[in-house]
Image 1 (cartoon, rainbow, N blue to C red):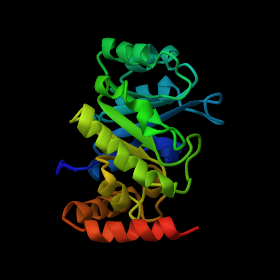
Image 2: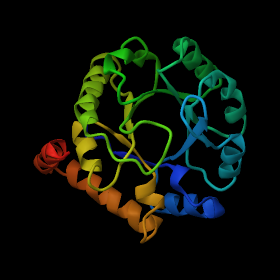
Image 3: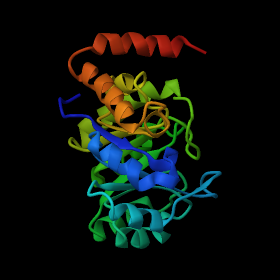
Length: 243
């Protein structure tokens, strides 16, 4: 794992939509590196969320990169609309996309960053033929579709395998994780090789507010970056033993 600063990407899926702009601005002031926008169509995952109008409204209140995670059956139908209103990057799923390379190339044509996401049950080797064409890989550490889920502990060795694949085939490609990320799990996934963390409920659902939650998450990450890998390994072993 390189010493590149770990990036934090708050997910607005868990935000209070009555004060969405305010909360995104709080996250920005607290040091967020990008904003993660989960788009669900009710087909690819059993939930509905967020259209292009949300991205358009966010673009007016923040200069942070807006990362659009398309958990949809046909991402190609959504790319132009979201790109037009200010999305900076797209994450599309390997699962169910029979023309993934074409989708990635379309994202490139639109001048946006491209990433590929895989669900917990999808093997890392599925990325071997596409990783050279993308800017980032997203490993889901919960099954997509809902916020407030528990971290799937068996994804930790998978993150390590994804890091190994990236270092072998596309050094510089970012490795992002999404699902159940908080101050306890963040050091574990960083130790496994992640360099971008998506966090939703642990930030926007924190009782002491967005600023305190972001500080807590950053402190947890910084401790691991400063050399507490042994502690992260111990925590990982304890997590894997539980349940």
